[in-house]
Image (cartoon, rainbow, N blue to C red; front, side, top):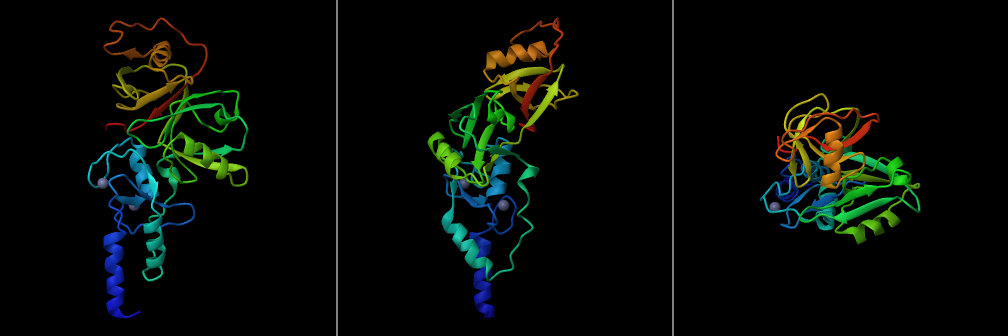
Length: 264
Ligand SMILES: [Zn+2]
Ligand SMILES: [Zn+2]
């Protein structure tokens, strides 16, 4: 390639294909794709999933709200085209396990999930999982936010369901969910304040760190039911139950789904 041409291509890829999150050229490899957000800024899919996994709600570039995600086919094509000319930078195609939980859902006629759209946040939220059906066995939990199926985002529930149908590969598909953890515990000594996503831990304890947000307890996500189970575990809900004392000794292990690093 001519030196001049090389410079132009390099400049093009630097200006058009640089992801502001990782500062690398956006690449699409395997199932990873490039993602466009409503303000038209573009990112590597793994970068924007990581960003949203921390429950950030605005564009890393311009701070406009992110309400949906789109696959950016044009930039993807450009990326493939330019990667023929440039040295491809494969370092930034890291694995999704670092920042999100990847759930492998097996093909089934009945998953037993109740899902709903989230206002002003991409993805869908799992409000209930039937623990006798397949989604629960595959690792889906009430409170999870599903961002993508096989790395592909979707606009709404309808698209989510058609992706579920069309994306099965070898009877499995992978779901990218926001960074979340499932723990099984007998007691939880912490204080919480209510938040629109759940209950925020006010200090560090054995199981949770300050500002972790509990979204589900024993499969319950409704704020009132969640509160009952948190109380049973010995927790203290600030402002809601000012003088709560732990009378209750739980006999069964409770399962908590929580997001880490929420507003740290
Ligand atoms: Zn990136
Ligand atoms: Zn933006």
